[in-house]
Amino acid sequence: MSLTDKMLHINLSKGEVGKYAIVPGDPDRCEKIAAFLDDSRKVTQKREFTTWEGYLEGQLVTVTSTGIGGPSAAICIEELVKCGADTFIRVGTCASTCEKVSRGDIVVVNGTVRMEGTGCHYLPLEFPAVPNYELTKLLEETSRELGFPTSVGITITKDSFYTQTEPETKPVREELISRWNAYVRGGAIATSMEEATLFLTASSLGVRAASVMVSATNYENGVSKKNSADVYPTDAIQRPIKTAVETIRKLIRGGK
Image 1 (cartoon, one colour):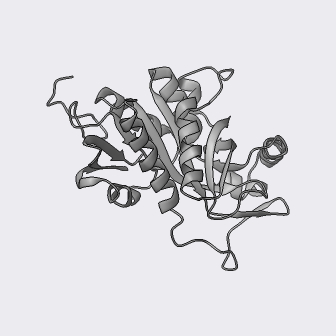
Image 2 (cartoon, rainbow, N blue to C red; image 1 turned 90 degrees about the vertical axis):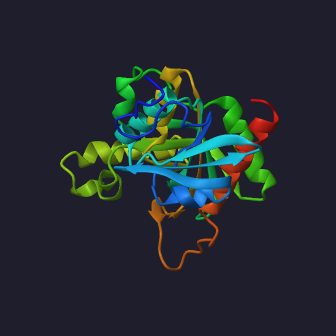
């Protein structure tokens, strides 16, 4: 790839991407994240992939949205790596699957259930979907230093939103409900739609990836709940953003 060649989906070329990349799912979150960087600006937007950039400690940091789910996340990571990124932190939201994780709490992922399909195109099912250990430790440390309620644990990555929220309406409802209950009983603390793909893609490409999220729900009597009676901190999405940014700052200062 020449320096002028644009990647097919993210519309970026080599030299336009920093070593460090923050990858939210929602394109609208890119500007919110970039606001914590110096000299931030919007770079490009194509399909679900919006990119902003800015600087931390003088180093370029790229912020690119992955869209919803595994297939687009894999495309995003693949193309960012081709353009020069080698360290990825996902910032996003999740739903609680345990009573110890409440709305507004930070979840740092140390492994995730592979209830998705894209990862199988990268590594066999026996290979665990786990993040980079150093990044995960730094995310937990930073979140706690910032004073955020923080849980570290296994999450569930699934490909379909409505087979989670309305499994009883689906033809394979018995299997969906049985597997989901097993994951929760096994100790899964939250669920989202990108982590397994992110970790497996990164592992297969030899780069670092980790994830920090904020819970959008409470978990009561075996059900993930989000309603008007719940207290959702106004700074909720800024919590994982600040955690990711300060973690990258530590990496840069440490020469890592």
